[in-house]
Length: 184
Image (cartoon, rainbow, N blue to C red; front, top):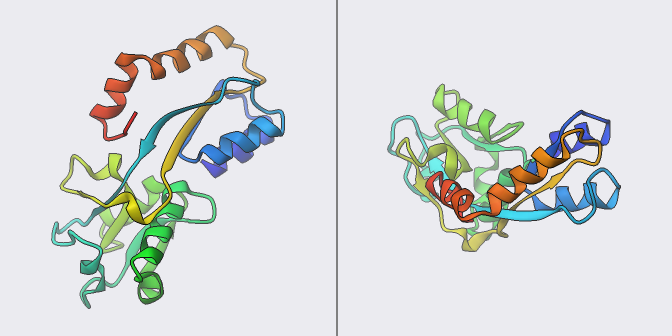
């Protein structure tokens, strides 16, 4: 999300920006990179935990000595990484787990670290691990992951961009989001 925001600030030819962090979208709106009035929160994301072996099912499992590396997205610019850090801090595990943490640039890369067994487990987007044996984590220990979208000011496809945002907000769009693990 953060990397895409920087690309938009530098003139990338995008039509619509969807971010797992509402604040990134609001910042781009304030800086004049998005069409005014087009920002919409379209879903709330959830965190999940996953391991290739399937035996890491809880945050406390991350404390086991055989779990040497835990992947998360980089909290400095990845919304799910920010939420993972908040969750680990709220449960009192952040300091203990810090030596085990490895950072992906985004949720996909963090997941790949665990999928390829370069990390023993991953805390990432629920949407990435829900169909492969992941466990959804309690969201009370982190701020809501409010995912937002808006039309990029430089779009040349305004009607199509607006139609896409309208579809996301429709009952059909909300059903698709829910079917893939997001809370519309």
